[in-house]
Length: 192
Image (cartoon, rainbow, N blue to C red; front, side, top):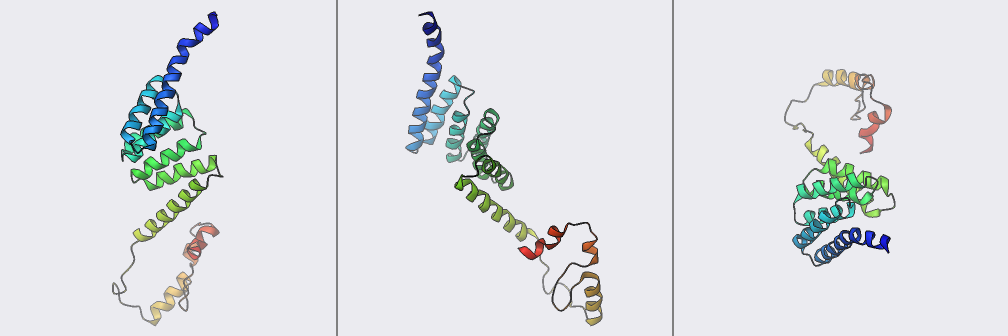
């Protein structure tokens, strides 16, 4: 009939895109990431609005260590399907591959918000959070014990009254309490 004939030509690109996607999936499964990326590229030419194709090609590029191409495709997947957790996961992978850990954490966190039951995403968020905290702690300059002479008793008493440090216990003094930090921020140093 007339309706079937009109539908047939539009079905051809979708079918061909699905065939290229299947070929990409097979190549990916065999570890042929270049072949997978090429097949996904052919599928994208036929179906440029398909977020899954961009996501799959991002995965192939990540395995090829092409972080920028992976990020470009992951961003396109996020644009095409913003509420899809896997698109944000791929963005996190690409950013992590590029060494942009803080941005990767944001992407994984978004993926986790969209799909809280995904344990792999939750583990990634925890892992990167720990890494970033450790890196931040390591980047804080630590004074050398020999950097300055130890103050005498009079200087120690003056310091204790202004900072709240007494008998080896370090507590924030009035200057810190008046700084406007919230109570959780003031106590954060106790919880690490």
